[in-house]
Image (cartoon, rainbow, N blue to C red; front, side, top):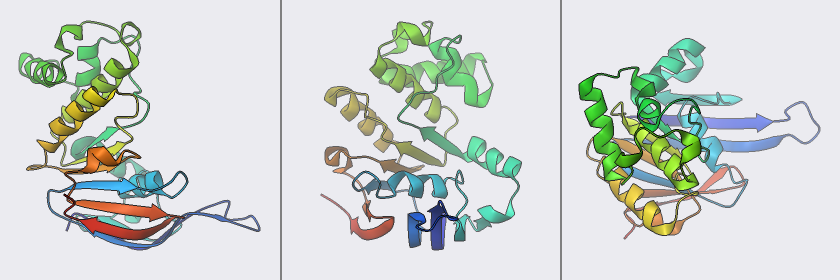
Length: 224
């Protein structure tokens, strides 16, 4: 077992007359090295589900486990260490550090600028076709190039789980396809969880979780 959610509720505005359920009565188990998609309309709870699995959001009630570790029973610093050590994150916004080069940004999670680490980073950048930009600063890049840099940064520490929230939203179709194909190569060693509105990038997903109004409406398996 990698992730397990038991009767999870995530409620906003809990003190108001009408609280908002971002997640409602979620029970879910995810295990193995799989490519998992999360889909649903805006406001359906897709990102909230991803952030709860990653330990960014602690549920109002219920339990979330990562490898039998109960998020609610670990300190914020231990939670952060788990994310840094075992997870990779790709967000809609790139969150690159403006004064650092592309190469420096990619190496930030591992805090290692050794020759070996630089070669690894260069290899990832090369697979995205942006190795020639390694010495550029974020302001010198296009929106798509900045997002590709952020994705390379998420992969540098060989994460056990890659969490991606709309990772291809800023990319053209060709670049988006390249990124998804590259991520799929990691599936043999890594669980990949992607929130997206784009059905086409989930055509090879092992499971697709369909969200509606904070609940899991269905889980499609072995999509073709």
